[in-house]
Length: 197
Image 1 (cartoon, helix red, strand yellow):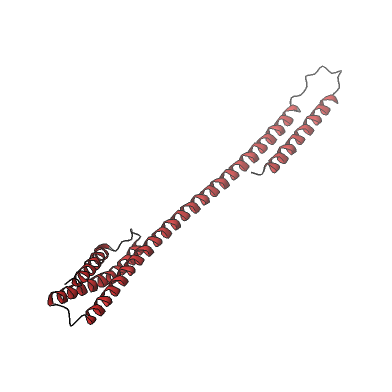
Image 2: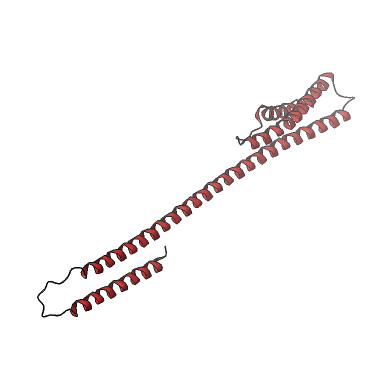
């Protein structure tokens, strides 16, 4: 609020009012004292009228200054509220992006583990092919299928996670991501059991 301008305006009004009073007092003292006629009220009326007008001008100027400051404060409050809302939206987007990144990293880890497990079981079967029994071969083949299924499910779930980021939902791989985890565990378990046969 610009109080300096308001004080200057009030000071100017007071100066004009004091000058008007001095002028009025000097005008009344110049009147002849010997006459017993009543003093004319017309001389006092213009002085009061000037004071009333000046007071009205000061009040209007003060009201306008206060209204202008109030409007400016409302505008600043609206701008701060909009900035706060924008910052909250950016924070939500950033947290959502981080959740999507974590989910994608988990799916990539599942896919990598399934691929490594499948390659290791193939190498293991190649070295033990002559000494492996038929039930062990069946279990290794079942483990391969489960590991390849886990790999496929992990790759299938990754686009679904990025779609949930665009839709602004809670990121999740859905059924494909859950299936990838369980098929990976089952494939590794079956492959490990085939070593015991």
